[in-house]
Image (cartoon, rainbow, N blue to C red; front, side, top):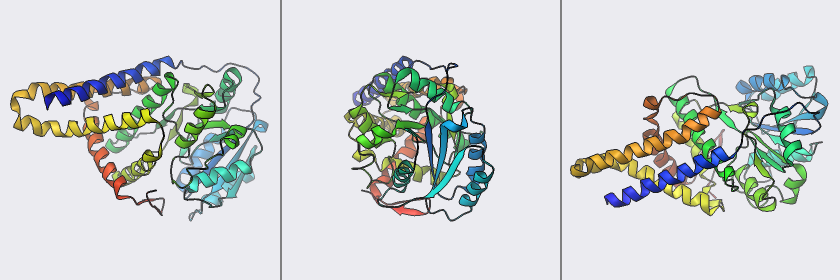
Length: 375
């Protein structure tokens, strides 16, 4: 049995180091002073986001980009609080184009419906999506504009970071977010992007229409970003790119409690079985097996104490591997990580992984007051 564990952990190490190498292959992008010319339609679906909209609107107001070159389209997804009133007040005092429209539900995915409705009402060729619980950097559009002019992409995926107040639960989400960014950027480095985040995503409207938007996956509640990425990289394999720039980092709000953290990840996991990337599926299986093994090792040490030293060595191989992966992302995002405080993360993640797996197999989950069934 010890050889099985050894093979798993070594395979995990080499896979993660490959992603580290891919991460480094994606060169940082630095914006230049050139004439802004790209016109953006920024789409923001929302549902009961009154506590978050004010912060988002403040960052929108500070965007360093010509007001005539972008518009903001909020899509109200049946909010039951005063979200719409907050946006209406913002419209009255706004110096740039901002509007709110109502979502039209035609599928099992409210967010995909909202984005599709907004695209139909958009005026510009470049679509940019973000979330109502996000905050935007002031040079976000300026950096995106320069990147598009210099690289001619049809889809641009950007970095996202979880904010943290230093609490255990928010630190966990931030570190977990670092690992997802590492996989995202690392896979772009090998020319085979596996992940992206709809909180910081841009694409040409024409390309969206050419790949038939969300058609074929709109029965799945989540995945407005991943499934579109799969379609785009198939249709435009050289023009789906990652914007690795500190000036383009969008920050998002973490969940307040463990129940919501688990539900959010069950929602993410609900799309896994529908993804077509064999590489991502194999990576997911490897991560699953290693996490199961990590939780089993303490018990194996009790029953096979003569192998205790080797089992402990495998634990630290996993810890060091994860630390290297997360540390490089943290450095890019200008965050510091203490290795000794980091050591709890893999064990918490392994337990959460099993809980989420169990929850996703059960089928139904509740998100923002709605019940969704497994498809």
